[in-house]
Length: 370
Ligand code: HEM
Ligand code: HEM
Image 1: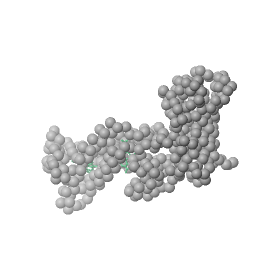
Image 2: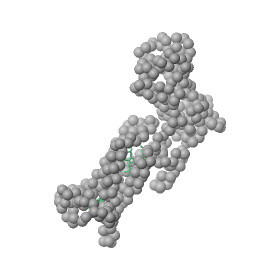
Image 3: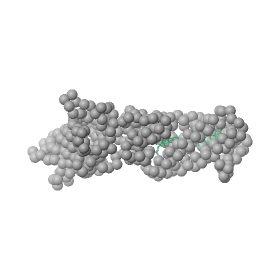
Image 4: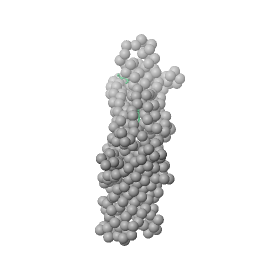
């Protein structure tokens, strides 16, 4: 089984959480030292501590940004809407920008202060002032204003970031925290762990299933020149979350490696990858993303969703049965697609004279609870 829920690298995870804690401490200390009546000693020490950690964070944030530009993060789940994926990406860049702009404005502010107090990082070494602005009161006023506004924006951005993660977990059952943590076993554990850390408590969820690729099968069949043919996808993966008691939380996502389609017939296997058929060069992957799983009155279930082949997305609904008491759990599904709706063979056989327009897809899934 391919790891279908890729995780950030350990470097990214450590940086994310260490820096998240540090930035929250910075926000807290900033608010306290500027707004709370403290003894002079405590206030002075807090200022020095704030400046010390602040400049270290400036260096770390720049290094993190450089590291990030050199390393791609794991792709966001295909189940997320395009707009949401774009918003997440923009949001992450905004956070990076603020992580740098905030300590930078603090540094400019202390550099331009008329007091000219040096920044001695945790009593350890002196951090220089920005030479061009030393003692410049106008710059100091501006930097102070910017520091406070950027801090406010940063707090709002973090709140939005956390709300987005919670929204995905609760509404869409998409546990992004799994991507930003090492716990792989059961998503509930990771949500619990970080949820507890943050004081959000836990959330119940439907069971995730791990598909056994050796016994599961995705087959397709149709007719060519009046003869039946059948093929299968050798490489595919699926993410299945199913709970008969909570169908709203159930969802299925599957990806198919189009180049892995085999029929056993050399002519078909040579033709399928070509531009007019699966066009694997431009569209290596097909995907199915469910939008709703429902129970049928006569028994069994129906999964409605979107099937994307050759970059063309069409709605698809298929019925399936599931034997949850079996070990492993067995699900069978079947649906028919119109190949021309996906422009498959549209150039070579637009009237379905040779290859049937309807192609049946059979699913046989054997899976165990994760
Ligand atoms: C100061 C606080 C925080 C900052 C500055 C921050 C910043 C970021 C940034 C920049 C990314 C994108 C990483 C990348 O793609 O390069 C990210 C991802 C992420 N953050 Fe935070 N974060 C903060 C706090 C939190 C908290 C409290 C949570 C817990 C809910 C959280 C959960 C996540 C998750 C789950 C991801 C991965 C999103 C994905 O699936 O792509 N972050 N964070
Ligand atoms: C790294 C991230 C940083 C965060 C999250 C942060 C946050 C804050 C916040 C929330 C305030 C209170 C703003 C107000 O109420 O007016 C503040 C004030 C302040 N910060 Fe930072 N800061 C950071 C970095 C720095 C750095 C690097 C320096 C200097 C080297 C610095 C120096 C100051 C000073 C001197 C004040 C007091 C401003 C005043 O009293 O008007 N900060 N900071």
